[in-house]
Length: 293
Image 1 (cartoon, rainbow, N blue to C red):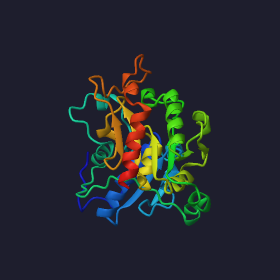
Image 2 (cartoon, rainbow, N blue to C red):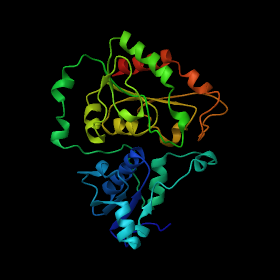
Image 3 (cartoon, rainbow, N blue to C red):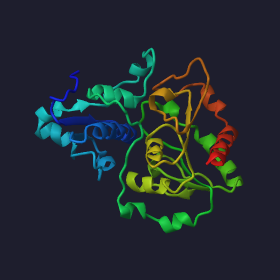
């Protein structure tokens, strides 16, 4: 890995794959680099996630990685791949480090004051999206994303839908206004939840800004909530290591088990870690979060 010096080039090309969460974590790295090296030109190559970087003042240009790979393969090879990893990398690591730190190291540019908060820059029109309606909804306003991508490498990270159903009942009894966000294809609308799905990532970010809390598994919605400074309850359980993907500003609910984190790529036969995340426990944590705001 080439170390950055004052004599090095003033441009860096970053290739960012995987999902929205990985791209949002990369936006924190871009902010850190630009904060320390204002003259640095940063070019982003991403696959279908360019909306994350729209209107980002730290990004010189954002390209479709597939197009660049086909039309300018030499440029594609020059780009630093920030998200080429397997979960085996985390299983065998003696001291797991946050994915954002891993990205900083891969770039090879010395950044003394690393930024860890993701960035998304919304237009004024996006900021005003249904604002009048959201401001009139009864509080507290809770956003939930109970489902996830149909295809995922860590199916164990999803909280069982049966327990989500129980949690939805508790939220309703507590007179909380629940907005369900995400993709309709991923799962059903929960009882008592208002349908705010299929808005796209940027408009979902605008909606999350108005919420008092977000509840979901580790994933794109959590990274997005962190970007817009909305606190989150993250149902991690025993599937993943919070030191790798979580943020200390959120309440990351884990389980203390010898098999955790498992990083399993197939559903567990006996998900004890999910049983330990009782809906009543999640409600208790939610109330703690709301009372501290």
